[in-house]
Image 1 (cartoon, rainbow, N blue to C red):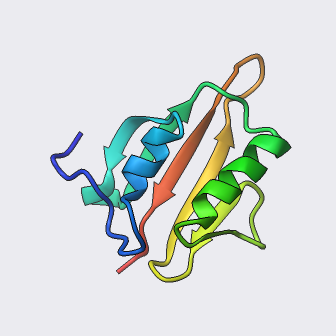
Image 2: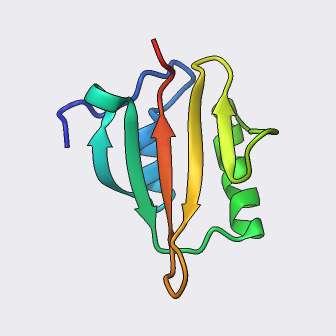
Length: 102
């Protein structure tokens, strides 16, 4: 993990803090080299789970991405969050938080 505790987002509390408070665990921090952080969560990304997450993320400016399934966008920061199901026979899911390309 790098020493930086937040991703650039001036819309309120850091996204890292928000995701950790929702039960996510950081598993890969490639924010410096690739603009991406990956998290894991033990719950399945069901329709109701995603709706609850959308409500929580919406308080800090995140919106459902109309063009991508299981994805959110932050218009002000141009960042993206994508959920990836854990796969067959597995529980949980991954969340990938990507910063905007410069």
